[in-house]
Length: 257
Image 1 (cartoon, rainbow, N blue to C red):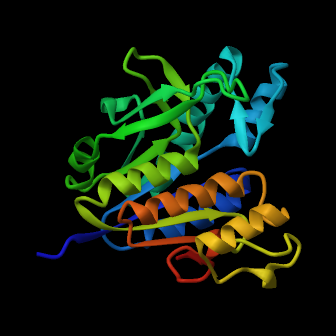
Image 2 (image 1 turned 90 degrees about the vertical axis):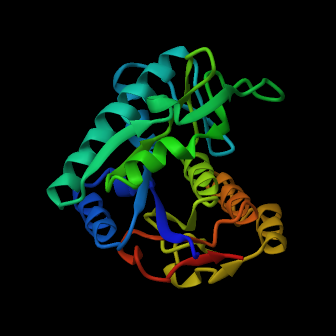
Image 3 (image 1 turned 135 degrees about the vertical axis):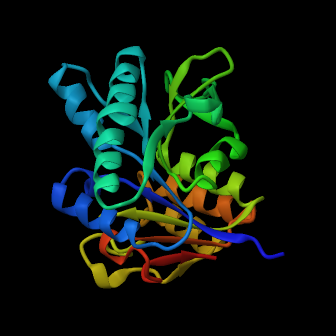
C-alpha cells in the first residue's frame, strides 16, 4: 500500500519579520493539500529582543552561540511569541494547528552540543524525533507548528537549529509517509549571486555543494540548510526544495539531488 503524502515546510529568515510576507507564506501553506507540518525559525526576532535586553548575539558558521541568558530569549521568542503568531494566523485561515516545540510530548530529544572548537552553550543536537507523537496530531487532522527548542533526557531546554529540526522531523516521518521537505525563506533558492535572483541554481548535488562551499558562494546559514537537506535525502525523504515564500507549493527553486 503506497504511503500517504505529507509536506514539511520550514519557514525562516526575513519572511517571519514582515507581517505581509508572513501572511503570504501562511496563505500559501494553507493551500497545500493533504497532511502537513510547519517548522519555524525566528532568529532575527530573537536577535532583536536580545539586543533590547542588552544581550549580545554571536553567530558561528550560521549557528547561534547560546549562553544561559540567550537561551531564555530563544525559548521566549521561538516557543512563545513566534509560535503563537503563526498558530493564530493559521487558525484564521482555517488550518487547525497547534504550536509545539521539541519538549512538548517529548517529541524531539537532543543533547547539548559538546565543546570541540567552539563552545555553543545551550545548543542542542537532535538525537531522536518521536514520530508517533507527531502522528497523533497529524492523523487527527491537526497541523503541528514546530518551534526550534528541544530538551535533553534531564529536561534541560536547548536551542536547536530550525533547519535541523525540519530535516529531522522529515526524516522521522519518512518511515510512515511519502515526505516532501521545503525550506522557505526570502530568496528564490540557492543563488550564485545573492543580488541576482536570476542566478538560482535549479539543482545542487553533493559535489556541487562542496565546490560552492569551498569557493565561498555558499556560506553562513545556507551551509547548515544544505547539510540538513542532504541528510534528509539520505534518510528517505522523497524531495527537498529550497525556495521563496511566494513560490511555496510550486516546483520553483533549488532542488536537492
